[in-house]
Image 1 (cartoon, helix red, strand yellow):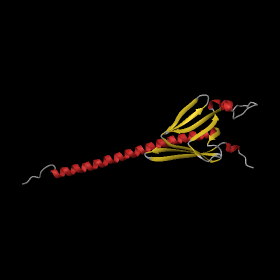
Image 2: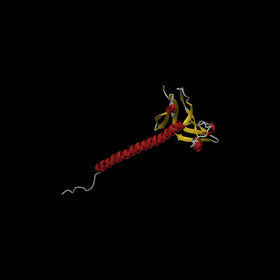
Image 3: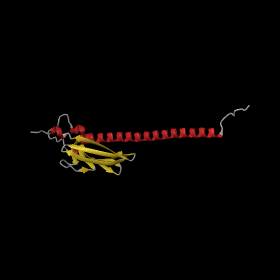
Image 4: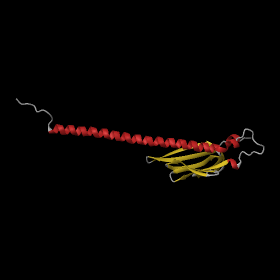
Amino acid sequence: MRRRPRGFNLVEALLSFALFLLVLSLIVQGVSQLSQVSKYFDAKSQVFAQATSLLSRLCTDVREANVVSVPAAGDSNTYAMLDLKKVEPSKWATYYPATPPTPWDPRDPALQEQVIYTLAGDQLQCQTLTSGSQLETVATGVQGFTVKRVRELCIETRISFLVNQRLTVFSRQVWLPQMAERTHP
């Protein structure tokens, strides 16, 4: 009587090993793709958060501005900078007094600060010109920054970032507060 051999023969062992390697390579490939997708969405969400914060800051500065020099009123060109004058936060108590003094000018140059946003390389910088000049980097990785007057009292700001070889553009329009002071006949 013949005994059946125990274990695997060489062909069965090689087939089992090849099948194991195939399944293992599929698992590794899936994990690798999942990691790439995760990195892509993490980078995208970081850029989105940075752009949202930056546009919010720009809009706040534009709304607080008494004068927007660049882009000037009536100028529909696109610029790579934003130049405005607003009340210096440390002087708000002087600017908004409880009872205004008799000779009081709310646009007094002594109370104003000039704020200039420009793009230097891939950094968006904000320069505040008061008694002491301050230069601050407000965003990095910026590919483009443009400002344009859409209408007389509306300014559009565009910021673009490069995320995983794709250009992502964010924009926001801001109506200037002078709109409330305007009266139509």
